[in-house]
Each structure stands twice: as structure tokens, then as C-alpha cells.
Image 1 (cartoon, helix red, strand yellow):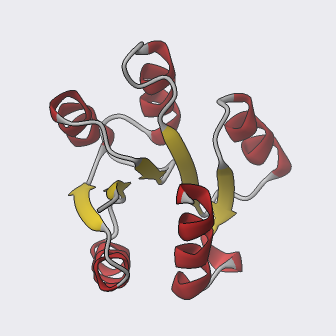
Image 2 (tube, helix red, strand yellow):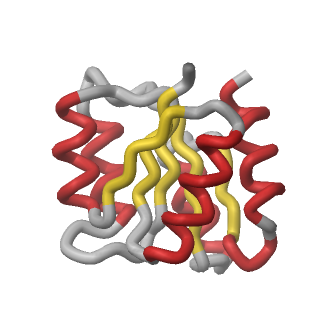
Length: 121
């Protein structure tokens, strides 16, 4: 069973994505901010990190920088799922060698799940 760490601070989206991912057979862990995500990543490396950028305490960019600097985590697959959709944001994400940059408003939860499945094949 593939394990996913979802880093998202919106309770509504946490509920939608954890429900859908579990229905598809994924094991899902949730962190509601960057600090919580770092703690969970130290405990266990997931198969995929789904990361929002706008987060309390430690934002997604700072978390991604720490992940890429950590030898144990530097090859971790990451999908950014954010409302930040400016070209500069997408390009910044790609410089961190992420798998995909998905803009929340452009994808239904079902489409996001399909992108996750493709990434984990």
C-alpha cells in the first residue's frame, strides 16, 4: 500500500482528499502545517508528498527546500497542489524537481487522484 503525506491546512480539502485517497487504497497521513510535516517526515518517508504552498508557520517553499536538502528525503516524489497559479510559482516549483504542479482551481479532486496514480505507477 502506497503511503501519502498530505500537507494542507484547509479542513474541507483534507476531508475530501483523505476520503478519496483511502477509497483508492492509499494510506494517508495529514499535516496541517510545514512544521507538522517535517516531524512526520522524520518519522517515516512516504511514497509521495502532496504539498500546499500557503501554510501556517513554515510555508510549502521552506518545507520543500528542507526536503531537498535532506539526504534521506531528497528523492521524495512531490506534487504541489496549490492555489498559487502564477507562472513564476509553477517555475519555482519545477526548479525543486517536483513531479507535478497542480493548481487547485483547475483540477477536480477526481482528476487530482488520477494524477497521483500516474505519479506513483
